Amino acid sequence: MGAVMLSEYLTAAQDKAFRYGRHDCALFAARWVKLRTGRDVTLGIRHTSLREGIEQLRAAGYEDHIALAAAQLEARESPLLAQKGDIAVIHRSLGIVTGERVALLERKGLVYFPITAASRAFVV
Image 1 (cartoon, helix red, strand yellow):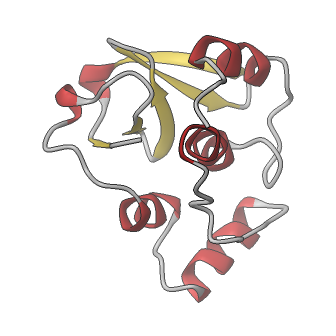
Image 2 (cartoon, helix red, strand yellow):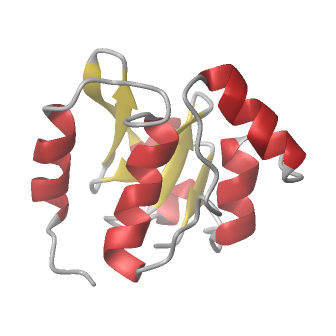
């Protein structure tokens, strides 16, 4: 499953427009997990807006996309122990650890934050 390199994944993600339900932070992280592990951590939840996504997550018993990730992935003891390719939480968004930084998908495209900004991290 791990044939796609992280750099290739990030390059491809950068070229797509942000759109809830198609290319948002949760799906950005979930697609990476699927490519690396074969697991669909979205539980099949699909949405077309932020509101719809939150409603569906809550109907499935999750407060938000971070709670869903926490239920599906093993937590790192500390975000500072995250490895390249892990998932990290920064500012209520899910991103991908690239080493000492975390790639987050925002409306303006990919942005990078230092790993020290992460509040949680999950093993991929």
